Length: 380
Image 1 (cartoon, one colour):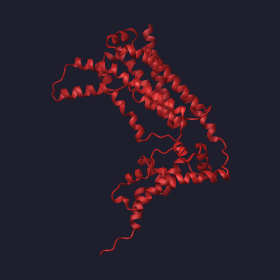
Image 2: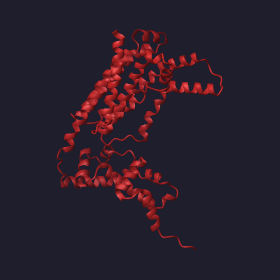
Image 3: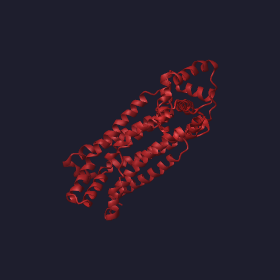
Image 4: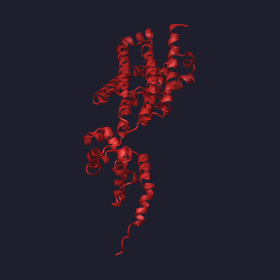
């Protein structure tokens, strides 16, 4: 077995390990939201390893059909990695974190990863429509050059989100919390990879050196660290999940009467007077900053005194705001979903579930019942 064949097999094993770890994280019952984010991140890295393995395999490149499919299906999807690692850090530290429509905008630059595939589709579409097109060699050269320079925004994106993650951790006081320590290790691992990638990228993007770099070391200086990253992130991330079980079973001391007298009015003021529930991105951290109460205190009051979760507490006010919209007959110029968003909900599924939980009926059933009870206007 040659040196190149050994590394080729190592890349394949990295892909298989990534798929296995991502599936374990996806179906893990503990810390489901952070695990799904980490699982998606690892799966994208694994697909990049698969891409290198396939295009280094003669059995794949010599088959015209497989080669065409490989060029049409994007396997190197790197731009979402930055947002995924940033949201993974936030969701691990803040259990109330949710990916809203605003956060989803971070994934739009994925279009950069689809550039070669879009070029091929446009090229063939133009050919079918009898437009004047350059020779196929031009398309091949364009894609090769595109793939070289697309790595610059990819590297930059991950670096920026690493910086955002580090800055977020710096603002969070979690002491020796194991998840906080794991997040610091997580960022360091990616930072090491970014340094390695940067050392490779500098000569790679210089036109006179690109072919020399590929012919000398190929992509192995970058992809071997990627395989190591898959192992480290997957195994460590999965092992962190069961640690939450003892926390869930720990006996919590009920809040004292003095604490209830101090905290409950602040929470009600934040909802009833300041109407924080209208903010669709409201979470435990934001409520804590607004009221000046520690997050643990808020959770204690809600769970032990009011017998509600944070979401149940906030959504209760949102449901009442929606019902108020109905009572004011605002449905004349607003749809049900628009009124739900106006009340602070950020998704139709959450709204439907919360409304039925609080009222025992669907929003449409409630609206119909309310309209039937309204007095009909007298004919003049």
